[in-house]
Image 1 (tube, rainbow, N blue to C red):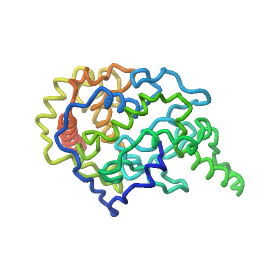
Image 2 (cartoon, one colour; image 1 turned 30 degrees about the vertical axis):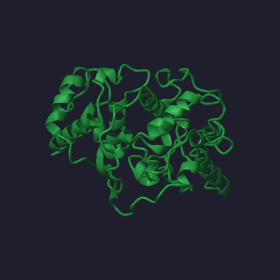
Image 3 (tube, rainbow, N blue to C red; image 1 turned 90 degrees about the horizontal axis):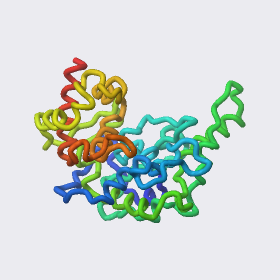
Image 4 (cartoon, rainbow, N blue to C red; image 1 turned 45 degrees about the horizontal axis):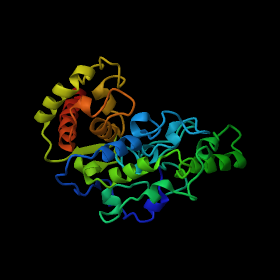
Length: 301
């Protein structure tokens, strides 16, 4: 969901090898049903649990072309965070890596400033976003001719697919748009509630968990709420997902930010709901990530 409306008011993020995240979030009330619904819609608003119909809009073959997370990333930071190396493919857009449009997709609190409120109008992009099918339809692969025409078509399609969709057609409901805005304006959903800093220059992206995290508490929370389905993080999950098990998944580039979103809010239209995970708080998720990060380091040494 590459938002030029939001990006136009973004405050430049600290440059350099280490991206620092402002600790904007403090103790918050429990998230409202609307915030939770907005988090699920951020993942994939076409899903029933996220308020959608369960079907893709007409002319859309891949939901990634209309998912918010596809361009803004699971950590809301686009290429400034976990999606720094996400490349475009025929089946998906990206956060801008490698294309000619340098507009920031970073919509975290640190980037846009605490006084910048995400609005429904910013999300909808009425009259300024691309049509749903344009991005995927524009994909042109580079061929072996090395012709100027092929390279130009590839470059144009690469960039078009990463432009924000026009959500004014009605497929994204008003309730969904309002809850998406509420979610993005909820400070306790910002990446700063989990991560003290993120270094996208390292591969895989380096995540430093907040200093208040407690690894022992994270291990206990995992045992009580996650172990039944996923088992020992160092082995294959009994349910077969994620592929290779939790530690193998977290060793991949950018996966700690994906983990933080899915474990905090659930995955729409699956059995992995907030309720099934004990309604985790931001602290619970940070505690688990610290424990798993330490476990991963021991496993790799």
